[in-house]
Length: 251
Ligand SMILES: Nc1ncnc2c1ncn2[C@@H]1O[C@H](COP(=O)(O)OP(=O)(O)O)[C@@H](O)[C@H]1O
Ligand SMILES: [Mg+2]
Image 1 (cartoon, rainbow, N blue to C red):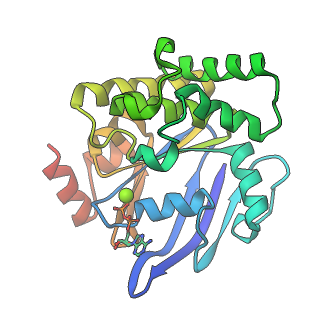
Image 2: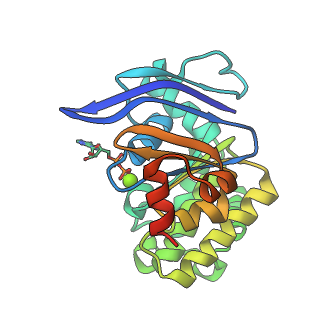
């Protein structure tokens, strides 16, 4: 589904990503774990084509883009690819939502961008996406600003799935939420995944989140991928000292 090779990105003297390879198979959930500053969010921004890398190649197996290095797309083409094939949920809802629009308006906005204009169809499609994200429909005209953190993440999820993307990128989608809210949002993500079969990449510094959702995991440290494998294997029997430390500190 996704193949990225030798991605590099520096900010001044900080090497945020060093020769990072990513491979994601259709329908799977890839987890990316690592402590704060290890380059996870940078990697997701690059995969969402929000920012350009210093070097690297990026391919998605979606119609019309086979064999195209997506890092070479211009801004307009990148925007089109994002609309058609990608969805993203940020840790910080301010990055993903217009906080003063209505919640349904946030989803509708995305639908309008691909040409839907009929009011009723827009409203119905937005409603379906919100419902699938376990968002209570009696709140759909409230702006995210007035909603809880958990509800805001559900609006982001609805927006991410609204156009039926091939790949959804999640950056710490439950970080900062109360534990019980976290658990419910994770349940929603798990169910969305089961119902839609869509491919996910989920980033978290929290091994619990990775354990709950991912099949494969990539461990990052200071811009490098230090370990990679099936979640069960890597977490049961971590090979790299850094992963061992992560696993032990999360028990
Ligand atoms: N826009 C930016 N400008 C300067 N430095 C950045 C920027 N984005 C990230 N960095 C740096 O790159 C490194 C990786 O950051 P980030 O990808 O946010 O890590 P993570 O998401 O794993 O916490 C950090 O050292 C961070 O300070
Ligand atoms: Mg981050």
